[in-house]
Every structure is written in C-alpha cells, then in structure tokens.
Amino acid sequence: MMLEVKQLDAGYGDVQVLRGVSMEVAEGEIVSMVGANGAGKTTLIRTVMGTLPAMAGEVRFLGERISGRPAHEIARMGMAQVMEGRRLFGHMEVEDNLLVGGDLLRDARRSRDNLEWVYSLFPRLRERRRQLARSFSGGEQQMLAIGRALMTSPRLLLLDEPSIGLAPIMVKDIFGKLPQISARGITILLVEQDVHRSLSLAERGYVLEHGEIVMSGSGSTLLADEGLRRAYLGL
Image (cartoon, rainbow, N blue to C red; front, side, top):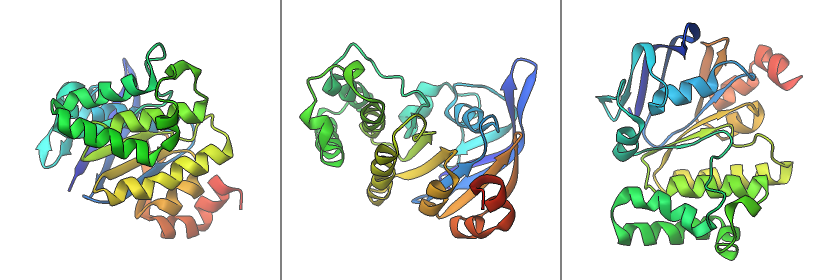
C-alpha cells in the first residue's frame, strides 16, 4: 500500500471534523475522495500531509507511520500536495515557482529533467515561463501549482479540489493530464466535488459525508449507484 489511513479523527480545536476515517491507496492507482463542500475532504488531505495534527488514528505512507511528522519530512519521503487555492508565489516568475519545487530534490539534473517534463505536460507554462505567476488566470495557476508539485518527483500526489473556480474548458484540460501523470508512475489521491469527472478517472473511490466514509468501491460501481447519482449528480 502506498497510503493507509486507519480510524482517523481530526479537526480544529474542539471541533471534530473527521470521525474514524479509514481508507487506502495502492501504488499506481488513481483514487478519488468525493463529497459535498464541508464534508471534511480538505481536512483529510491536511492531516495526511502533516499540516494538521490527527486527534486519533494513524496515517502510514509506504508502510511507515507518518502521523505526527512535520509536513516537510513527509514531502521529502515522496508525497506532494496541490492545495486548494494553489498558494503560488505570485511575485515570482513561472519558472522560478517551478524551481522552488525542484529545490526539494537537491539534485540539479533531476530537477532539469522534471522541468522539461512539466513543460511538455503543460506547454503554456513554457511559453509564459518569464511571466509573474500572479498574472496568470485561475486555470493557468492550477497548471503551475500541479507542475510545482511534480517538480519534487513525488511517489504520491494529493490534489485538493483542482477544479474549483475554473472554467469548464480548463477543468477538462487539467483532468485530461491526470492519466499522463499516472502513467509516469505517480500515484494520485484526488479530492474533488466534481463527482462524475473524478470517479470516471478513478480505479477506486470513497464518498465522504459529515466526516465519515459512507461508501467505497470502484469508480464505475460508485457512478452506477442510484443513491449517489441522486445525491450528487441530480439524476
């Protein structure tokens, strides 16, 4: 297993958001975590990545317990997060934003190779590599945020709501890159409100409601579930 989450409780102060969440992501999979806004999806990602401490339970990455470790240690183990809101360095050029991600490798040659791959994946970034990140549209910023995460050569990529605030054509473009990223040997955990698009991509999926896992199964099985279709797809 690439990632194992066992009986995880998490929240903010006295407010508990996640209750007994258990899930797993196998190496090479694309796994989707879907649910409505406020279900606890971002809390889960933050707890897995180490930016939010768990109240109870544990998280294992590549078989090793990472609960309680700081985020920078987890990142060096091979996990990368693309945060909701993107969190770019707006005053820096596009290429400099990417190279910040490459700095984690401490390997100039791998960083150069990754930069070329990111540019081939998102040609618009190459074309505009000398522009300031803050001058980009929302979709272009999302490409840049994903590219920066890929510069770290992650084993596991965590994507938190990559479609939020984007035009449909940009969402289609970005989601269309995920199979290419997976084909490079990168495992993906996709946290997303767009149920149909994310489950269509995923080998497996989980449905999170009010901080608890209420359904799990293959992407196709979940999409065919009548209750889920009524609740999330309006069908």
